[in-house]
Image 1 (cartoon, one colour):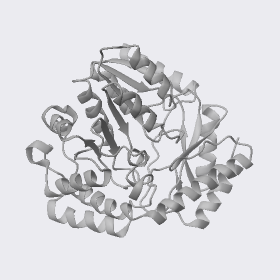
Image 2 (cartoon, rainbow, N blue to C red):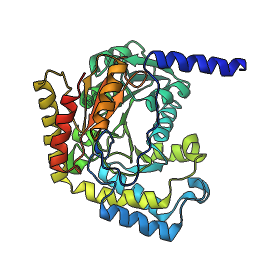
Image 3 (cartoon, rainbow, N blue to C red):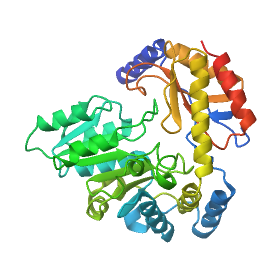
Image 4 (cartoon, one colour):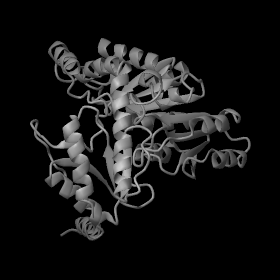
Length: 378
């Protein structure tokens, strides 16, 4: 075995010893597992109106976008979705990407062209972390959800223009960021706040407009919002929304926008239909909130310190990575899918189950899933 391949084999062996091997588990179209692992919070991925819109666009446009957004990939479906998302989020302008990951890379990298300091929450998603790494700016990691610490960092770097980067609802534990406090710290010092609203869009705020809207910050010129379209909207893609000057900067210079094939028109049309449904889905949001509280209450009653779900995500600690894998596998064997999060996916290095609430799961299945999770606990 050649040297580099032997090194990869050694690293794989070390991951296996630490319980960190990951495996793909394909599911069939007729899969009957109760889904408390995916991110289809509002149950819209299979909604008849969403599927119909995607099917009609597939017939009209064909399978793919056939090019990048600046070549041949932009269609009237893309433009309609951007208009709808900007209006929903209360932003002046919006730009659609082929994934939330690429949207985050573009947003952070764009900020670094005018900000020479980036302050990133310690629990930020990998896409935000990678955006910070490629930005070229100095990056300081701030304690989790601590506006006072962020303000102190900014005060410790006078004369610097800073971008503060956070999630609104954090993707592992599901806790809510203090966006108003972070915005006060940034705006008082002439900086920019970038908020990844991926796990709040569709779930929080007026008409489900997200965590930024819930905090009363929609449309603020010094706030840049990103989100994925693959969670509560049940599709795929990403968006950056904010001041038109920022959006034009992304069109002109955003590498993950310019050099990436546009999202397929069928997916874009399906997401647009999902936006219309999500804006009026107060009943689904109420059910999701009630179910999140039920999961947390049931786990705590069984002796597990589950986190409080600010939206549709909560987690429960496992004794270690092997125990987390075994717990998730036992649940899956009994027909319930749960998330199994281990390092490096966890910001604090501990392992846990991550549970996501899906308003589309029938009540009987949801109740049975709670029983299974508790009964399979290590």
